[in-house]
Image (cartoon, rainbow, N blue to C red):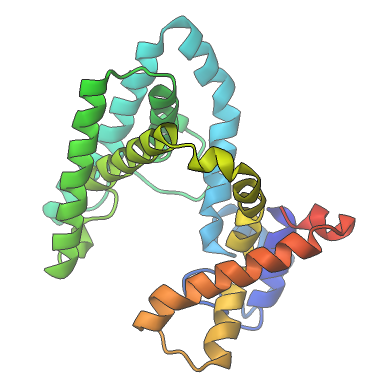
Length: 258
């Protein structure tokens, strides 16, 4: 995270590479780097790292709770849902300011947007919920997907950020995919290929804006467009996956690229 933050910061001093990722830094300095790093203003899709770090340092506490009383974990999920999804959604409908801050570095796991998903993944995997309850989550997920699509079509998307729809949609999709994997041996038969592709995912995540820029400039692809939305990501993934599988054989590069 630190190495690639430095790399992207140096790139950012020359301006934007891709609007949904790097942040331009026209007056670079050590102070500016530190402040930008703390606030995730270098390469803002690195929010993933900030979230993961918080979850990692919280895991020993959650593991202890899971052994003593797993119901408390679900209680934390409920708290996270109410504070990060339900209340914020109601406030957005009322055009009121948000109550909770979404700082880049989050120090309180109970107020983190991500803790609920993290715990729910564990609860689902450990069969905390029965089949009827899982079906309820899948139904809520399907309803949420429909609402999200309709909201986008009717241009109500300003109120569909951190909402109950996002929460139930994510949980529902996870349950469906988990059950699909368990019912078929396709993933087992192709586990070597899947593992190889999976090993390149994080590296692709880190550098994909640069490839987006190269591809869109080389082929004069406008943004937004159908080609940019659907074809460019696919080309980027295939090219990057093949490239990283080859170059990660070199020890030095394998150390830098996750």
